[in-house]
Image 1: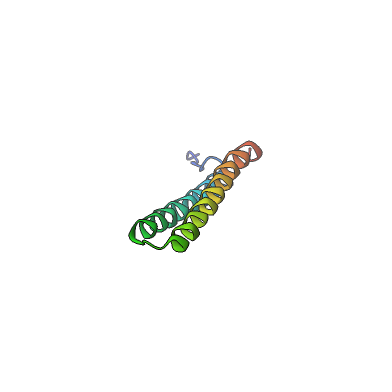
Image 2: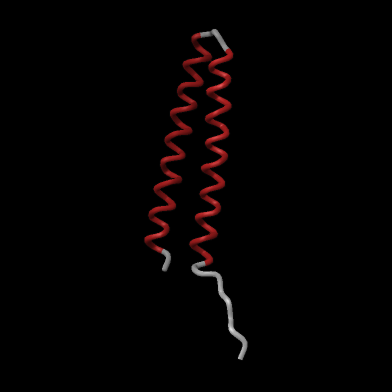
Length: 75
């Protein structure tokens, strides 16, 4: 009988990869917002970009918590 190779915990690894991709996209959006804030002198624009950065950080924190909690659930 030939040995069988199976990927360990495929659903868990797939979810981790998807959440890592989301986190990477959020990091790119955060960097773009920071660069836009540096490039502008207008107070209102800078304040709006700060709010955007805060919301991106919040979404990234949720994504990180989701990965951690998903690891605990998937066998």
